[in-house]
Amino acid sequence: MKKGVTSLGRFLIEEQRRFPEATGDFTLILEQIAFAAKIISREVNKAGLINILGKAYSVNVHGEEQQKLDVYANQKMIEALDHIGKVCAMASEEEDDVIHVPDRYPKGKYVVVFDPLDGSSNIDVNISIGTIFGIYKRVSEGENGCEKDFLQKGRKLVGAGYVIYGSSTMFVYSTGNGVSGFTLDPSVGEFLLSHPNIKIPEKGKIYSINEANYHRWDEKIRKYVEYIKNLEERQYTSRYIGSLVADFHRNLLKGGVFLYPGDSKNPKGKLRLLYEANPLAYIVEQAGGLATDGEQMILDIQPESLHQKTPLIIGSKWEVETYLKFMRGEA
Ligand SMILES: O=P(O)(O)OC[C@H]1O[C@](O)(COP(=O)(O)O)[C@@H](O)[C@@H]1O
Ligand SMILES: [Mg+2]
Ligand SMILES: [Mg+2]
Image (cartoon, rainbow, N blue to C red; front, side, top):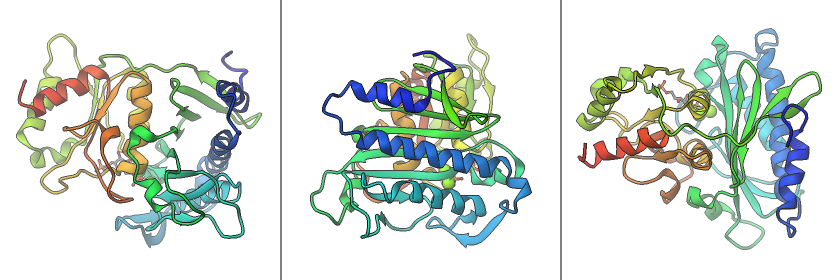
């Protein structure tokens, strides 16, 4: 489909045509997430003017201070999805427990996980932030419950993506048929196809890791990072924003690797499996890259709890495969 003139809505309809049995439920969920993203983007863009910067003076389940925009984005995601009759329940970084659809609304056959605003620490300094989401089909029966539906492996995702609020706002998603990127044209209020069929280069030149944690890394991780930095055939450069979505998006387009490994202080790293690692792992695999925790592919990890953390090494195939070789002691 044509770049610049194909709206996300139109693209979704075309995608749905591939499945004659499709009911449109799933498409509506994606449309609603894109709608919430436009509202969040609007607030992000004028955040300095409307008293929405700064702390909300509350902490989330991880003990992290919530920002006002974290709370706002969380609310908008829930409001966009809770009444449409297609979702059974949601799980968010900002909520301790599963968010049930209120009884007054019908429940649907999907569950949605999200990090409503990723990279919160960058909000007040005008650096790119994002929203990450994943969609699963329910596996449990009955009107209530749905808890079990969240503990599915990332391989079972039926769709996932992210929105980046950067120098432009972009919506990037996959439903298992490649990765497509749309840029928000604020003058018409639509996401327009700008990056069809995104493929991550097989090798890159960027590595992204918080090197302040160096002294806490295992020897194998240190060796890998030194190896990458000193590679003779390719001069790598270090780029680390501290906003997962932004770091990931750059590396997806340019090639390279993002690492948030476990360390002596945080053996499982910092990032959350369900609503950070899994959706991005799904995207990267669809784009031809890989994502691992150092032992297994991220999408093969069996989740045990909503907010569990995982080491995340994600990006171009060569860099991630090389990391695995270092972990296995083969390099
Ligand atoms: O400051 P650190 O330890 O390098 O961590 C940065 C990471 O933390 C995060 O900000 C966590 O996400 P949230 O802002 O959603 O909590 C990631 O976006 C980022 O990759
Ligand atoms: Mg996050
Ligand atoms: Mg967040």
